[in-house]
Image (cartoon, rainbow, N blue to C red; front, side, top):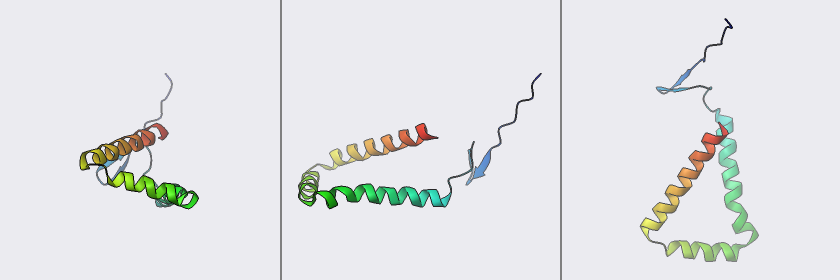
Length: 83
């Protein structure tokens, strides 16, 4: 019978992961990338960014929460697919 390696679990704040926790340098790189992406539209087309931002200000709280929820969901899905 072939020997199967045991899955090693790493503890981090009471949660168990099948991989080591995210390194802090990777977290800072991800946050830096968010800043780069967020800054592209105001840099490339400030007028369009301003108009878009004015339209966003007209949305109701429920609409903003819906878009926020969709953004969180897509982000979590992306993280899940990448791990």
